[in-house]
Image 1 (spheres, one colour):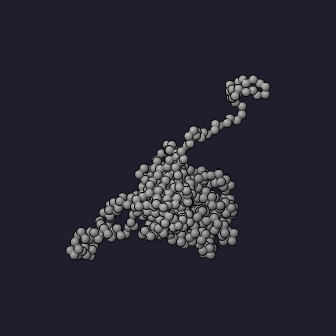
Image 2 (tube, one colour):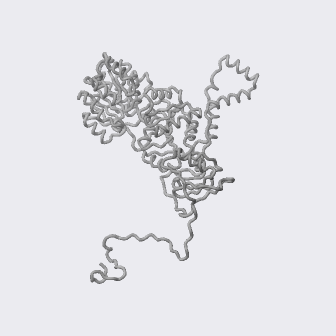
Image 3 (cartoon, one colour):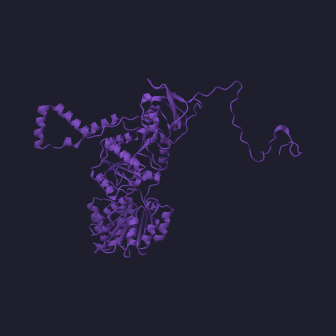
Length: 588
């Protein structure tokens, strides 16, 4: 349906941007009383920015078609992060362009003196982060006495980040008769308290779908060996070939390490983390929007609010900490009706964690192995044959040169050169190990009991170690330990080769393996600088000898029976037929 109740100036702006019908949250705010406060919860990517822009229109413009001269701000929008605030400012700029609005942004990391000058010249709408807005307010650069509408975007995130005092000081400086529009992913207790204090008879709008995952996002979980995470990300980027992709890591160090690995393999990748300046972060996002970068490797600073139009792929190179992190990261794709894919890279040692994470978010993911190099090369052939360049009409100059090439080189040589040129632009896929058994699609179930005293033993490879030292690794059958991926993992962390490794014995909760004495010192030194997955440890250990046989007549250990506390049940008979305190032994 069209936007029937939209202010005419805003309706023209929507039409110019190609908006044909409102999203559910936009339709809900348009149906509300234009003088009423709103408390709104909606899914990420649902068009919340345009929604509160439309909701504020009648209050800001009334019957006028355009704003008057800029002066003290009439509307204030507060967002938790610099990137989100800048994005909100861009959205409101085009939405109110037909009405002649002056929009000023005030965010940390930008030139504060420039913001001061822009505020002094006057503004109709101010967008900023809590800390910077409070700073301008305390310095007297920001006057909120004429404010008509205050918007809190991602209010739950702002409270989580510790901005409560900033928000309260800013809202206390606004007129009490203002409209307050509060948007939050969830309405927790703290959000409800904030709404009760600063809103009047707010209309509660909830468009979230709590019983189902985002319908435009396809979730996949890809099992990988712990030492092949980077290679799996390479193959995923090559397999999906999305115009833009976000790859999430949990720490800045992991972001820098993975981005270097991708650039070394030929990807155009940028980074986004809290240690970068505002200009560096803005440049990284702009490179992704313009298509100059194929992938952005980021921490969770990019998990909320960012709207990247051509982002079709989100990769969780490291598992999110909780359900909210999974949903907000994944919500960067599948926006505004477009389809997207969210892929969790799951090391064998983190399978249980991934299953619990997906279950808590009520998400059914398709489990699979990593895309193989052969699958990627087959897709490359299909994509090359479907390349639009092959269907374009050639110019006369191109036809002349094509005829010359065919005459001098022959059609096979020209076609082969075209194939080589196409392949040279693509990073080479990686050869990855995939477990022969699929991971469980059903919830976790304990394994059947195993022989408790016998560990599975893998004898040394041919030509392997003889004079060896033993080491232990704190993963075993409980973490799906398998020699096919343990062997390359040991080689990587210890800077050794397969011939330096002897027997590998896998127990329930640990694995022991042999290292050749010649490589022992090199292995120990490499362990000091190795980066290990999660809580995994590698340390020297004794040889796992067989259990000594029982001596003749020795009885197996029997766990003592549980001793009951309190009086025995009715009808019980005391043992040994004894007496107690002169009374006969009789049922009590």
